[in-house]
Length: 429
Image (cartoon, rainbow, N blue to C red):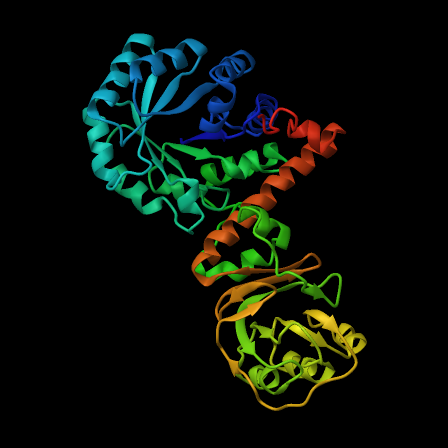
């Protein structure tokens, strides 16, 4: 039977303990003081976990890289049953951790994150006396749509010691991790970002015990093939937050306040008011595309009701115009998401200036055909094609964190500042 370990990757003890209580109520077997939590709160958080959960296996995710003896001693004396050292550390450091572990009665797990060859690194760890290894796909790699399962299978064949698996697991993938050979499933976000960690833990345990996936709405990451599905769930603020507060297209606003648009861009460059190329682009576009039109940011209008009817016939996802549009009551009634800088009554003439498919500048940002475009009531965000998967996954991560915080605010009848310990984290100096 595999164990469920919850990775408490918070930065505040109070929030970590609340989630731990929920997860244990749902069946979590092991509790991990995550690296961010230990860095923020120190080994005191291990003591807090040991005091409240005396019968649980407590993991100190130290990710030791040097000074192994001292760090293992600290973790052991604080109450941890096991602690981690990085697989990319030297033989001397891993050996020191193992020796200290024997002396102080703490199991040493070698975290293989960043190893060039996971199976070889796991074999080395076993030879050096480690009690366990962790196949760990880091968050940054998860954001690129990777999973840990192939490495897990290779490691399982390479060693006879305990194998943990961490890397974006959820109730839909837990059964696969067990089948691939994991003795311990390390679950972070699917528990720590869930509004109800008890229910989430029960779903994961059920998947582990039955060998069947349990559907999950969130905690799933996208690859190139399912990016549209993920982007449909997130907001433009989520995308901005996940991309280090990247701005939306300046001055581009929706005609419908509840507009919702997701799709790859087909770009158009046109002279102000010249509606020939935007209309021609409708026939060139594929289903689900978003037309992104550079038109100088001024009038006359080069998009209206008839163009909108045509775009609907071609099943476009929406239109972005850095210029003017008209027939706005009719466009709103038709329901196609249209975002524009200006609205006016008069149109220009179809002279045919411009081109279809170039890199354009819209709302102060460059947009190329194939970039992903997301629009809603707050504006329009562009995800450059090379960054789109990573940005989409970071946006989903932000949405999930907000879901947890929202639940804590509501359940505790409290405020955002109190839940996030805002004063504690204000910049000093």
